[in-house]
Length: 519
Image (tube, rainbow, N blue to C red; front, side, top):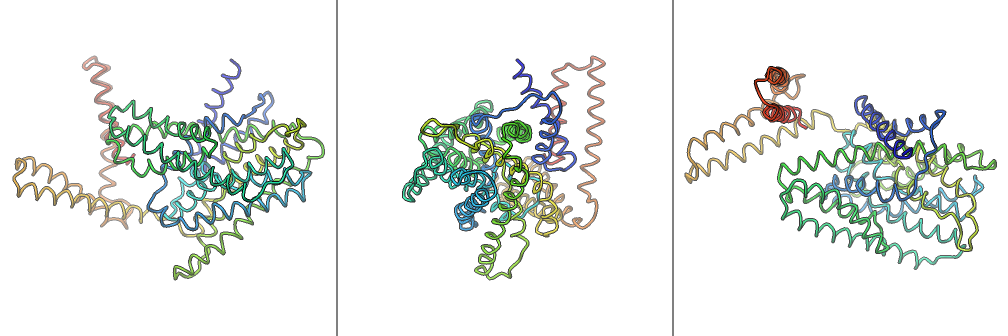
């Protein structure tokens, strides 16, 4: 029961901190890690030991799936070349640099230094997506950062398995063997993920039950992960591919009501899991530190050196790549996008899961030396990147000048609303000429579309003013909804309406208020 109580307290703490982060516009992952560290250092806090099964099997699949669903296939096609270079080349370069620095500065053998390099080589999709949600990055840049973090795991996973096999067996691994493992992990994971997506698409097309649709959506990432791992391929790649495929076809698989429900349920699940997992990173670090020996007392300096190495290698890789891409595109070289890309390379949940899965013993039964140090260094670098880069990424984006201004987004949305309303009016004109519906119905629909068109034109014409007529209308309507809600409660308190009627009318007011708020 104590373990259950600890988990419940952790969930409550993480939820409160994450809610505060949203209200204060602070990166939630960064604040959660700091809160976890603070709580872990309080007297009486029980030791938190995280197992790889909790991270890899319970937490990781739905978070990866949610991140992949947000990825735009159209934007992905436009950036697949630089994504491929970053997902393979930069991972290899980062692993080599971290391994070399760790071998020079720390007591780690070169085998374990290579393991540490493989663990920290790839950026983390969960952390990158969570940090990127609050930044108004251009679509192509957002896709580039997110796609790199999603697709570089296959490379780092191959490196990790090769490095671990060397560390526990002290045997050489050929390049042919490593290439075969890469093809098996990445290719097999891709095939299984695509197959899962096709099966789920066929099921969801024939399903109109909101509860069943929700269950299918929650089970899909776990099915993709478990089946891929059972086939000895990459579960991470499988989940990512399934998420990308289903995310691009989601609007054609369900109706509006089910989509609203899925969005609400998955948003809640992702919020809770992200809150808990980033808190766990901070909570677990003091427990890991307690297992270190005296010769590892310089681990804070070593962690900072490794984090600096990752940032430096990323800059040295991205700046030349960006210059080549801009030169081929006939554009003048700019530092803005490379700076944001370089600073967005945070580490997080995936490296932590990989580090926790390092074996305790070698093939001959001897204890794997310095395993605690590898865990502490990996977790410390994750904490440093989440805190240092997480708290400053918004400032870097703002200073770079690439963030989309609110006026740009407002104008784009208003223009699209105009196009939609005009398309609806054109179709009504066609129906009217064909006499396919009564004139009174046509006129009613035309007035509705004309009202939407007027509102959109009003937003476009008043885009440069502080308050548009549409904004004032929304504010006044929300004030009126507050009055209606109070009157509804009074009618119920006076026993003039039943609870069923009160709930039904309250839901109607809530839906209208959500629609006015654009949520």
